[in-house]
Structures are given as C-alpha cells and as structure tokens.
Image 1 (cartoon, rainbow, N blue to C red):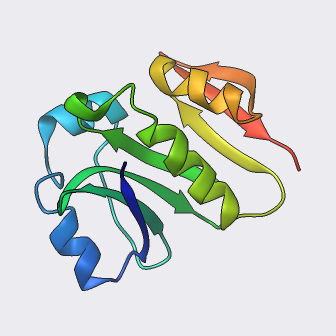
Image 2: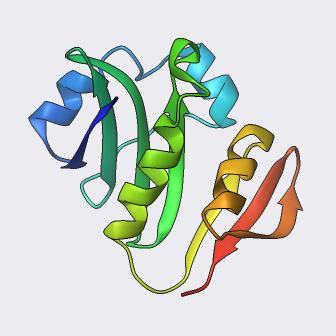
Image 3: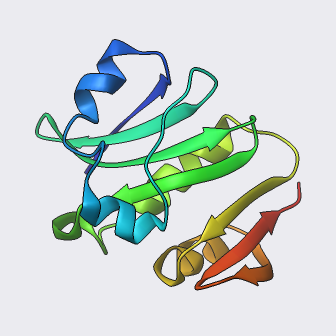
Length: 127
C-alpha cells in the first residue's frame, strides 16, 4: 500500500516531503515533543499517491524516534511496515519511547517494555 523511502536528515527530498509536518502542533502533541531533524538522523517516510502519509526516525543508529502516521492511514499496517524498514537498517539493541498506540505494533515486532516515562513506554529489542 505505502511506498517507503529511507532518507538522511540532510536530504532536500526529506525537507520537501516533511514540509507540512515540521512545526505542526497536532504532530508534536502526539509525539510529546517538538519534531526535530539533524544530519545524523535517518528517516523512513511513507508515501501514498505521491503524498507523505507518515514518517519515523532513527537516531544514533539504533534509537527509533518521531513516528507518525496521518489518522486517515492508521490501522492499515503503515506503522508496522515502517518498523520493519527501520529494523532492516539497524543492528544490535534497538530502543524507543512509545505511545500506547505504538506500543502494540512494537510488541508484535519483538520489542519489550522496559519502563515508563510519563504517558510513554520505554521499549527495547535485543538482537
């Protein structure tokens, strides 16, 4: 369904694909933080019919961050596909801080909860 593209944080394609999401109050409320980019960050961006429908990041080579899927495309497997794509480009132990909605898909992908941080869950996958 979705076309997934992996992009580096310094990519002009990424800047264009994510334009509507940078500074979005709705996205930041769900993420629990300001959406940020950096050169060392890698992104998996999901497209449908040429439009960006979701994204997820990787920092420090093994920490998943900043995952979001537009509400109209949720419950269709997009987030699960992005998890698998990120796992394909990482190795060793992978960590993340997840919302309740993300936690279910992460557990299906082998992650275990290791703690809590406010309304979010600390998750880890040891390989």
